[in-house]
Amino acid sequence: MNTQRWKFTVEYDGSPFYGWQRQDDVSPTIQGTIEDAIFGFCQQRITIHVAGRTDAGVHARGQVFHVDLPERDMTPFELHKAINAHLYPKRVSILSAEKVGDDFHARFSATNKLYTYRILRRSAPPALESKRLWHFRRDLDADAMREGAKYLLGTHDFTTFRDSECQAKSPVKTLDRLEIETIDLGHGATEFRIHAEAKSFLHHQVRNMVGTLTLVGDGKWKPDDMKTALEAKDRTKGGPTAPPEGLYLVRVDYP
Amino acid sequence: MNTQRWKFTVEYDGSPFYGWQRQDDVSPTIQGTIEDAIFGFCQQRITIHVAGRTDAGVHARGQVFHVDLPERDMTPFELHKAINAHLYPKRVSILSAEKVGDDFHARFSATNKLYTYRILRRSAPPALESKRLWHFRRDLDADAMREGAKYLLGTHDFTTFRDSECQAKSPVKTLDRLEIETIDLGHGATEFRIHAEAKSFLHHQVRNMVGTLTLVGDGKWKPDDMKTALEAKDRTKGGPTAPPEGLYLVRVDYP
Image 1: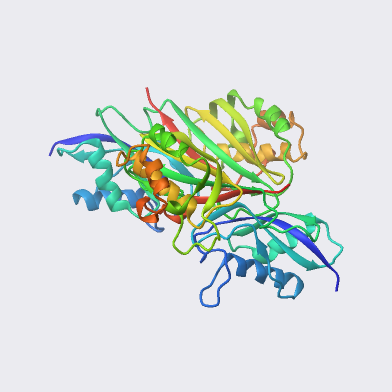
Image 2: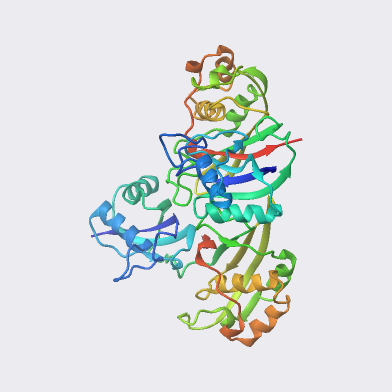
């Protein structure tokens, strides 16, 4: 049977899922939910291939996956609507579909990824965005965090910010952007949005960088302690792992 | 017993509540939830007074209420934290507390209110913000909506945009701002934020104005049909009521 490779962009709320990857012993996962919807659409069990797996609780505004589907006479718009009909109301939503060549691979063809980490800095718990950001009660010095973040830009051995279960062959990555945006919400509240871009990241790298930056924002560390931690190449010299609910995979870029 | 009048600013997710107002036959309501928390805090049943009641499903980022509490030696920060401890995790969160004089009234002292209505214009259902905005599948022409909105600015008889159960004495209101902001979300999606400001509004006025503006955006009406509808002073000549989940009371101003 002839197949056509498709690229899909997808949004999801990570909070009700055990992460992206389909697993035998836990359910639901995002991959399993989408593969079930594709089965509902074409009555075939087909494996999908993702740009970057996300952990339990992590959200996506623009995750990408590819899949080879049996050839059909459908426009991209019709196809994304048909699969969404099988996803609703599962908190996973296909934003767009695109025909690609057989040499396209969601993970290996990606040239850049943007993650954004959201922190709500205020005393009051979030009423409208619970499980959508990290609620941080103490003050954070944004300028100190910006100064600390600079030490992580560029090509480094990121072992200090790497999860012990990370399966990447090399701990060396190139971080192209680590920017701290602040939004004044009034009543003494601030939303922090930390934007991180790279071709690829180590497991937990963004959450470990963010957790460590909050030590600087909180005054427990000086900005140049980030440099010392990075150079130690030792996970135990880094700060805590920020919780998953603040993290969003926003965009994956291709040539 | 001596009392002190307090002004509170509060955020809430309207989706799990039967609106603001405490009622005998339905529960939970936002007012009931807050009055229960105040009871938990000081063991007294005390009525709170709101700036503007909101309907079931409508959210607030900055609702205001006042209440007379028994005098205690507490700072505003301590007080808002103490009441939040009794609210958690009920999707209602006190943002700030402030001591005010006995002549302050959350509703009658207000000089301006800002409501924002959020529309997600795209085919794909919202995965991350379900019940937080109105999902609108068809195209909307923002410029046509802006042209139509201009006819509503200023002082008018707003009977066309008034709910039949509205209890206001007069249908004449002064609309100071009706602005349509658009945010490009990529993948052919746009978020519309419609900002409406006035000293006070009729019941359902914002949702009826927004619902009618979507007729213009959708091409079913011409922009100046808004003028004809307004001048008819007849609810049946207006458009549909936009659903509650897109509406936020953002801010209430005082002298």
